[in-house]
Amino acid sequence: QVLLVESGGGLVQPGGSLRLSCAASGFRFSSYAMTWYRQAPGTERELVAQIGPRGVYTNYADSVKGRFTISRDNAKYTVSLQMNSLKPEDTAVYYCKAPTAVTGDYWGQGTQVTVSS
Image (cartoon, rainbow, N blue to C red; front, side):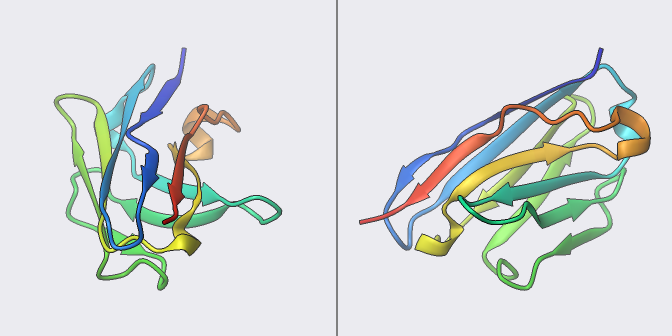
């Protein structure tokens, strides 16, 4: 059974930092790319960052380049998102996702990030 559990969200002031984590289980984690998405109220879910199976390839949305860093630990079945210099527009629910071919349309519960003074 596939399970993705996101954690690490919270309330932070503009300019602050948060580190999100996603614990995965139920599939061969080290074989697949992992992606962080986010969804703000009233908007479509958008890709934030992606990392290849071995952690060599990474890709970021233009809006977070230079501020966010994605990483993974295949031994621990976890993928993380270090978020620095946070802005109010980063406020959203953040989700991690494995490829649809592997986990179908399953999404975890997400973790809320709120950037506000």
